[in-house]
Amino acid sequence: MEDNNREVLYCSHCGAVIGEDEDYETIDGDIVCTDCVEQHTTTCDRCGATIWIDDSYGDECSNLCRYCYENHYTRCSCCDALLREDDAYHLDGYIYCRDCYDDEVDKNRSIHEYGFKPEPIFYGDDSNRFFGVELEIDGAGKDRDNADEILTIANKDGEHIYIKGDGSLDDGMEIVTHPMTLNYHKSFCWQEIMTKAISMGYRSHQTSTCGLHIHVNRSCLGETTDEQELVISHILFFVEKHWAEMLKFSRRSEYSMSRWAARYGFEKTGREILDKAKKGNNGRYAAVNLMNWATIEFRLFRGTLKYNTLIAALELVNAICDLAISLSDEGIANMSWSEFVDTINEPELIQYLKERRLYINEEIEIQEEV
Image (cartoon, rainbow, N blue to C red; front, side, top):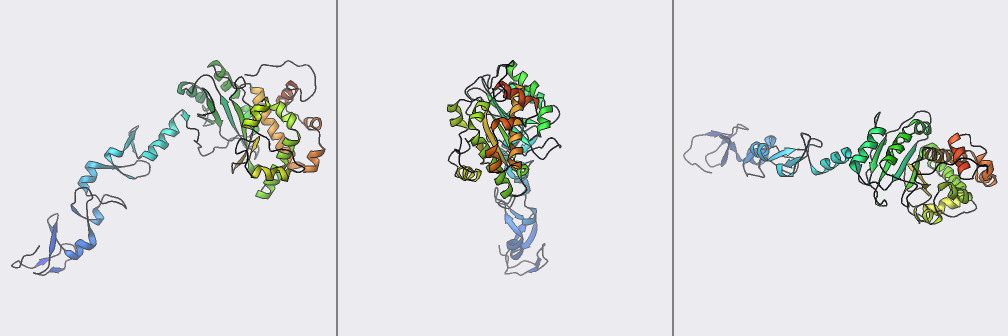
């Protein structure tokens, strides 16, 4: 604005004289020269008021005066993102943006979505080999109250498991452990979890939908990628060489195995089998799934709610890993199944091998699978 008969004015911000022919603005009652207006002020995106840049309550993408911020905006308690009040989510006295709200709800819900994958927590210090178990149970509902009961048992001394939904199940859920050493699994409350699941009406072996998947950390198989791949090739060679025994051990039918845990096919060397595996024709539905960067996954086993069977499966995977580290392809090729099981000392695995007629064909009492 102009005032040709005015007295000499000074900019309240920089102190410069504002000549009679120079424009100026008034901000909060103070006179400000046009240079300071251009360099140090902005406009509130909501009400249009001129405000000092340093006094803006917006973010890198917006400018807000104090009044508009305090009456129409807030910030996410987690990531500090600027939010319109109408876009804010409220939970337990805290304010969240949509993404942080979804994350917070997902962390605290009993049954997570299938893709949920928290930061792993490692349990046990007696080994550098860790086993993650995925145990599917079906028939009694994808039920929050049931999940809460299982979580209460498993997580009474720490976050040992979480529970996910799985579209392959009819009316059930998937119990997933954080990585544990073999000895930790043996001392874990698996029996109590299984007893509770059975009492609520869940089954695992006695379904056509459930599997037992066991992850092993790649890092325990060698210090370098090349060392790990060599051991993995030996694992594949052993599984393919003894496919008939592995199928019997798994308790799966041939159809179920081909659908959920297909073999790669026997070759003369483990490297050749590994090359086939890397082509990924089976996707993750392979007997030994190699699609995870940090683990390999043994998917062969049918689900179970029988404690001895679960521990036996873990012990078998552990024994195969030991063998793959210590022997070459030639050593594995020359070892018969009977010679392999003769190296087994674990009572749970010996018992299971006897039940499946894979050890010594002697009459023993067999408990029903659940």
